[in-house]
Image (cartoon, rainbow, N blue to C red; front, side, top):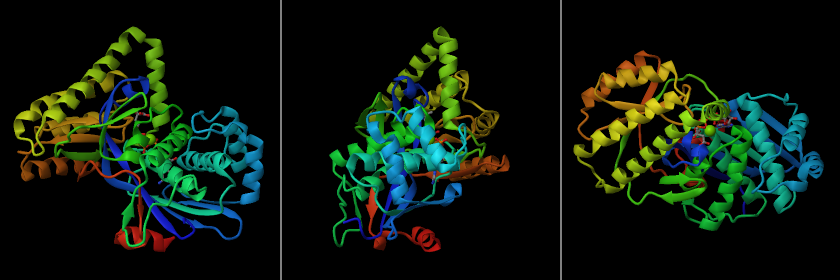
Length: 397
Ligand SMILES: Nc1ncnc2c1ncn2[C@@H]1O[C@H](COP(=O)(O)OP(=O)(O)O)[C@@H](O)[C@H]1O
Ligand SMILES: C[C@@](O)(CCOP(=O)(O)O)CC(=O)O
Ligand SMILES: [Mg+2]
């Protein structure tokens, strides 16, 4: 029963190779991050739907009856396989008092919530009386898939609230996950949320948020990587804000303008992803340094390609230069245009060299930290399993 208060979470992701190209049908390799978005779901007694999104400054509530009426007005063709239409989004914006062209984080987050709440409830029953709080360990709009983690959490919570999926947590268990079939449903609704936020997402980010681990993604086909070695990755946030939607649209424009020039670049990125997959799957769990020169060269080549397709940024160039001065190789990750870069750390990278690189990156105003990759996908938590930080966020709400 979901009637009790529940917490669920979904991870962010790092794209190793294939960002942007994956929107155009090429292969991407992506891994789940150990930074997560959390959602607290509880029933709202007074016939209301309440949503609090402290990360983007949203506190909204609506009467369930007004959402029900709104749904009747726009619901006819809600389906997890259909893109949200311009008309539907227009109606929802008017209802929520969001300006037509608004692209601010709070507007997109509210719109995604409203769309998913109405669409999921239209398919599975009445608009549920829910109180939803979402908070995240992920920086927003930095290339680590915060939009997908948000959409995956919303999809799982709303599907549970509408009883379209089970509440898999058994008495005495600290965490639980859903069946493959239920995860497929969560993923397809999360993709709709990503569509509201991104316009034209590939689906790789919500796939990682749903399934976790490390996977290859191409045109909706999700294949877990056979073997993933212990890769050490340094993540650096340049803190330069950017919008995935705008960057993805810019790449499309460039491809349309120069197809003969841009398509070979996308093919080359595809080949990089495939080459990287072969290397990773051939590597032992604790790889020796001899595997690294190829991985490093693939990072360098892809970073040049991403500049060619127009998603670089001076802050990312700086990041690459600084790490190169310490013998380390980096590329942007996610949509680029600022946001985060990843740096491959070798097994023989000395702690001293890494500290020096970190110090120089911080001196540029960047924030950096070492990450663990391959985290689990969307997960339901018992309150006893939540760590102190999560409990603190809950108690503050
Ligand atoms: N914790 C959150 N709460 C509400 N909305 C969020 C949250 N995290 C992300 N979002 C939504 O996702 C958008 C950022 O998505 P995007 O530009 O794709 O960047 P990224 O996915 O790389 O973080 C935000 O503008 C906001 O609408
Ligand atoms: C650029 C892209 O490949 C990844 C975007 O990731 P993010 O939103 O920047 O975390 C777009 C997509 O795959 O939908
Ligand atoms: Mg995103």
